[in-house]
Length: 170
Image (cartoon, rainbow, N blue to C red; front, top):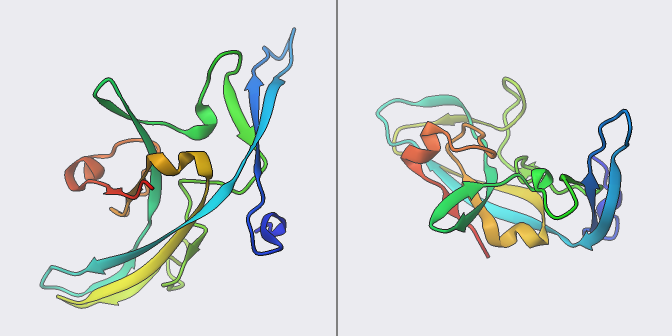
């Protein structure tokens, strides 16, 4: 992981580039404007409880952040880099902000594809863990946490619709 963004213990600003796409033949992609936004660390403590009668071994956990807005009574997920507007088709940036990916978790088992596993949870037992993400400050007011384990951060899954999201907006 590139730590140059936080060498002094603080996250540096993220440079957002608003890009108008070219056709690749007659025109190239063009940055039409740039702006700096602060990056923030979002830190959550989550407790998983085994409510079944059987022990759960090697439980994969995955906290994914979704960015959502509500307009005209309709809730929708948006992907920050896929936003378009007046004169631009997408946004790129050079910082570490990634709402979908945990950049930190403290409970780890080297099992399967990655280390974000809880080795065992017995019936009626709980495990508390911490997760963190780096996000753009302007997204803080639109963040929801998906702890269902399906990793969905860019679409509503059946699991999310059934079990819901945790509102972590500031």
